[in-house]
Amino acid sequence: MSEELGTRARTRLAPDVRRASILDAATRLILRKGGAARLTMEDVAHEAGVARGTLYLYFDSVDGIAAALRDRYAQALMDKVGPLLATGGSGSRFRRLRAVIARLAKAFEEHQELHHALFTAAGASAAPLGEAFHTLLRRFIQDGRDTGEFPGPDLDLTTGFLLAGLHAVLTEALHGTGSGKAVAAGPKVARRTLSP
Image (cartoon, rainbow, N blue to C red; front, side, top):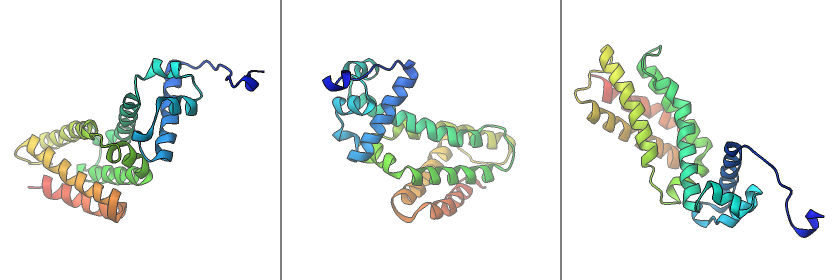
């Protein structure tokens, strides 16, 4: 009977599970529509299978949903590379940095449409993503300086310079030459920046 009236059966989910399912629905829509600018709260509610009122319990606007998606995307990238950039750790820092670049290039290649939709097409700032990487990379370089592997004279300048170089290489990989060249060029940029 509820199907005939166009109503949905209620499904109770834990709040974090419901929030994730809403973000998953928004991701599908963003990919289908080519960006967050074309989303509406009604579209997201329908795709997620929730009432608009339920959607507003979790997000106050489409911009709020898009910001949450960018945060989730950034966190997923941090989860992939964070362990490699952890202080201490085993192995050469240059080898670990090469592995980070390879993982990032692969992640950007696998999620190119989503990255573009969340950051480029939306005109949104990638600053939170850059800040998160800056913090990780700065700690990694400081650890290398403390052990004598990286002699860089100015920690903040070195971190910013390396981050800008890696960003340029990975952006080229994302929009142009592919991840193979990024994986090859990125470590060269890092070695030239961090070596005496």
